[in-house]
Length: 145
Image (cartoon, rainbow, N blue to C red):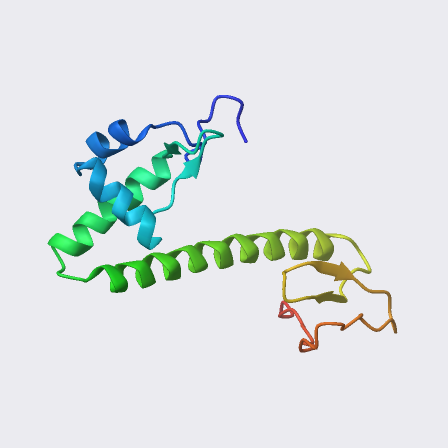
């Protein structure tokens, strides 16, 4: 991460500022927190602190509700699925990077990957540890003609 990059997950906005930035009433933000739609971080004194990502999510909730007519339960499910897709994309990028690193090393074409995305190189004839009951997949890169 660049030293000058701002973390969009940093909890920096108090509820009044978050409400103004999202175009909502502070009571609406409290209600969304109670139902688990957008949950800000808490300070030691239990005050809510919203991140830039939370503000963007609040704006998305408002758009889905007003423009698309989706109820709050549907919006909560949509946001959960979007978070899941983001996490899976991050995991995929990690696996791709590890795979590229292994393929670049000579003799490192056999590996195992577990459900969490951890990639482990294997020596010829070595069997992977499969404690989670996951599947074993044989990967063969395309041969260049």
